[in-house]
Image 1: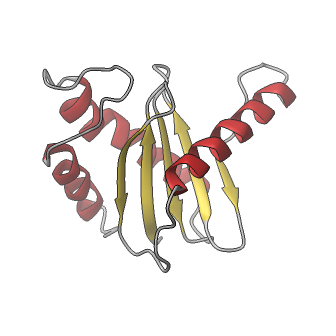
Image 2: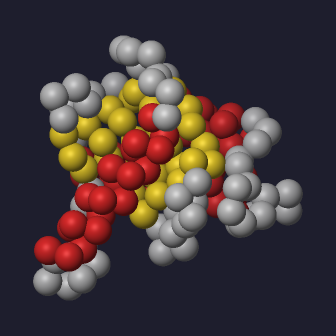
Amino acid sequence: MTLFCVYIFNKFGDNIFYKQWKRPRAVPEGEASLVAGFVYTLQRISSQMSTTGTGGFRAVQTPFYKLHYFETITGYRLALLTDRDTPTDSTQQLLEEIFRGPFNSCVTRSPTYTHTKGCLITGTEFDDALDALLKSKKLI
């Protein structure tokens, strides 16, 4: 499994966190907005086609990468770009672990983070905890 980058969006669609690892290409300007729109559109299509109304969009593969998607009940969206051969089930578990572990402890419970429009994840605490989790799983 090769991790390229991760995006985290809040319920307002703001890109509140971005980190890249082994990206084969430079990051185009405005990519975060494109990824947010792509994820939102696919989630809407998936929920409209679903018989339960909740959708089920978890991953989409392109000729260059695979985008894995995880949405929390509070509206946070995690998008992880990996190589095309990465299995979806194990990546879904990883995204859930990122949310339940570093995200909850360093962002949700942080007294300095407000869950409002435009509030970004700043500081290194979440970044360091994310790296520690991924290193413990030998992914970076």
